[in-house]
Length: 370
Image (cartoon, rainbow, N blue to C red; front, top):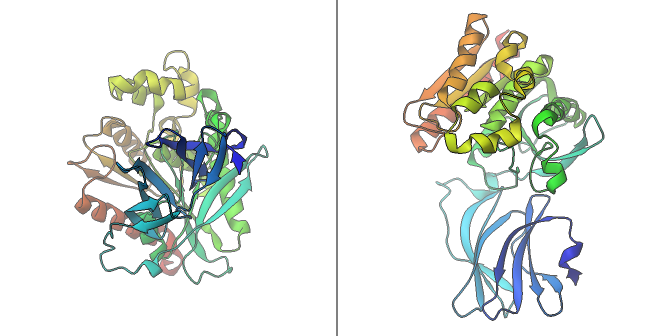
């Protein structure tokens, strides 16, 4: 038995039992979900027999209070609905989502790994290796930076990651400083003037990946969407010699124009994270890739929704134009019927296929072309 107050992990969800005698809660343990019940009289908690190795959500007691309905997914299992039977301490699957004929056995599970950043801070992340990967320093890798930044990379099912892996790429998905899931202090380590430290975390990743023995040091790619798109642009701008290519989806290129043009309901909220465009103008210029385009060396693919209210299309337009004017390599894919990200299947298929073709051309098959 453990006491709830001894945990150092975030609580993701809480549900009160029908009789009001105990709470059921989900702990976020290094991104993986663990479910516990807390006896409100004794203040003692016990772990429940829920599926492991993935993400649990949407806890809901049935009307009779004897079962808990929940969702579960893992890197090798797409999401389905389950129920947990309280009297027997067992769970059962209710729905069976389609995998479109793709066997579950073909999906790849990641390894949770950590590296020490420039200041000794440990950065956790998930390393996905293609099946049969060998330590011969030959594999290209996609470093996937999550959005937010108040968000967390977790071991959920990602059809896109599996597609990248089956296309011959390693995927490494870290939770650099500023990510949630590791406490308030960790989440605040990239706020306003600390932004550079998060970018430095990303810059430490190539050396870490080389040390695994799997990665070709000349074939390291940085990829991300929204804030992750900004981090992609920042990585190839401020650490240009580390990256073979970059892929930016709806990313911020200029904090001054972003804070002016993003939806009015978001401006003050985003200023608390990034800085005030009046008081912090010089710093925001300093960390905005748009003002340092001349440093970019890596080929870039930029993908944008024309109707994006969060990161307006102008953010992508301006950096694409600037790169082109300097003779840099940039491919720009705009979807007129999308907003912040890609929601339509036909557009996702087109974009993801284009990403792999772009990376094959400029990274994976580059040596063969020469």
